[in-house]
Length: 64
Image (cartoon, rainbow, N blue to C red):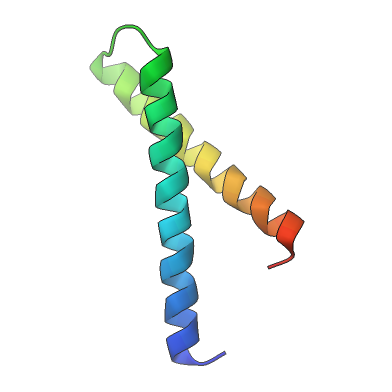
């Protein structure tokens, strides 16, 4: 793997994590009724964990 393809793979992975996080955070915002500061922190953290698990699950299925 060359340096250029490694950088591309890193950017694609970061983009995928960001997309998953945004989708999960948006879903959380739709489902919650009141938004408090602590709830924002918990929601963002749970969305980040969910994004990591979603990417790991997709990689396990597609063998990448």
